[in-house]
Image (cartoon, rainbow, N blue to C red; front, top):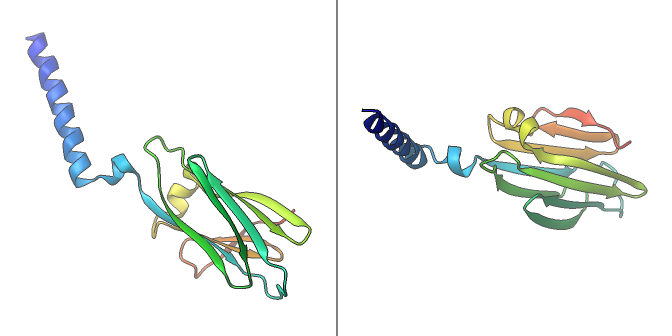
Length: 141
């Protein structure tokens, strides 16, 4: 009787996993998010905002963003919840590293539209999940 119970539990678990992977694959393959970093400087002149981003799974490379330009990418969260994208920003003599996407922090605050947007200005870094309402997250220093 105990063997039959164990077999039933294993088969039920396997069926549940198969069912979820077919009908709700995001729980196994990760949720997809869009991340966007925008140069929001007002008087950028000829100095670009330089950005270089990497993740725990690879390097996204760098860009030189003129006023109004953006750098964007899509990602899928990992099964283990370790997705992390770190960017280094440089403008003139100022330099700052920041987490453009990090699972524990961003699963909830980016969740409605699965969009994490950053607007970089002279006075700091602003976050939005809809690109309508921006909230200052931190300063350059």
